[in-house]
Image (cartoon, rainbow, N blue to C red):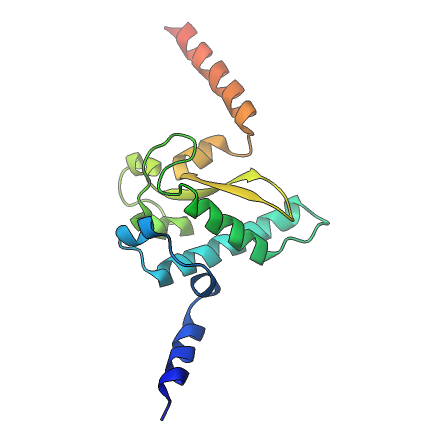
Length: 161
């Protein structure tokens, strides 16, 4: 029969790496997100970013531990709202991080949280949490490039009226 401590260690080892190392921010607990769900999401996002950045930053080595910490910091630093628009995010839509199609209409794109590369770096990356819609629109643009594009877009649309 297992001791109480052994049972706790077994339960701890079943948690994802992200759930073991990074406590869930309070605002996510308020939205009904569990520590386990947050940890699994953190690990999935870390893996996806690691794979993508391995190509983008080659030959530099991209450490998943550094990425995981930077993503967690972004969540803790205002991840309840879109960093760029200030719109509130709905973290209960976490299943859409798997790029599953949204079941609701596209109006929900402004609520689905996403991770944006703010500073691309192998040693000290910075991420921002924004909506899936914002992240798709921003793509790989810097803030200045995005602003320039948006100004051209708006000027062209105003000229059509």
